[in-house]
Image (cartoon, rainbow, N blue to C red):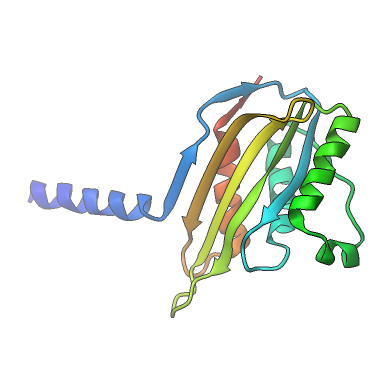
Length: 172
């Protein structure tokens, strides 16, 4: 009977951990009161404007941590759809250098969708990097992915991924 319980607990643990995957990061200590910025997240997902959606969630999670980043200047909506995300990211890093920001958070959205099938589970994959704009040096990098439950939203799954990624940072 005891061995059946142990086996069941191991199976549950494997099932739960199989829904998420995270790599990189580590505990990096960065000053909370430094000048921070958020640059565009490049959208590699098929969902339109997934990068912009993830950026907004990221800003709210950073605010929970006491970090209030400047957001790069938004382009008009019609230009936003025509402009390449990498070009927007490059322009935002130039803006961050002009503003003399100490750190900029950027990255990419690799997946942002509901999986096919009866349950339609949300699936999210996001990578983040923290750069020093003056030097272009990457000081921290991490990525995470999660497949949520059938009644969960993509934004809810993204919030969990971003919260875990930002949680790997130690702010002083």
